[in-house]
Image 1 (cartoon, rainbow, N blue to C red):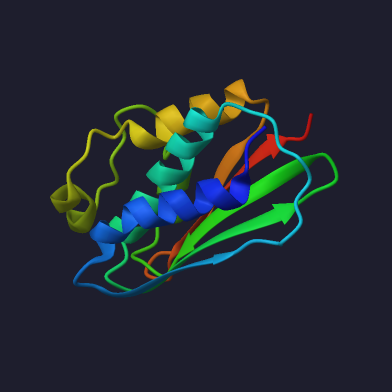
Image 2 (cartoon, one colour):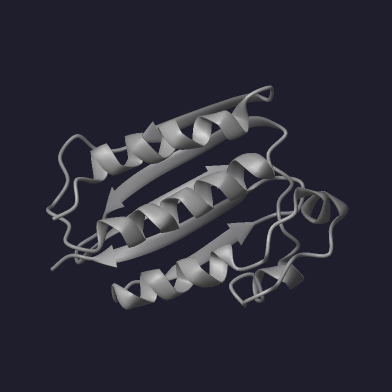
Length: 149
């Protein structure tokens, strides 16, 4: 069983150094009572850390919000940011290995282009799904679900 409150706090805490020097708030919106969640804590942590670090990396100022919404048969975790956003054409290939978007900000941020592909694998191993919504220059929201046992 995974304590999502504890896990989210831990991930936000360890991501804070990435936000240093930026005009940015990292916040959470998590219901006090959540249904019990079973899963691989390490893998769920890796997914959340990847989404958080991307959100912080591509947000110069504004906010990053981690939220949790219980659904009838799953828990949905979302990481929203007010960052650079993603062009609609690029959304489809976001979760492919070694894909980096054709954007100077993305290139200068570095990385291997594997984080989202690995996150997708981990979500699918849990029987969930992962997707993104975004508008260029208006931020992005990444969602993933973990089915309730």
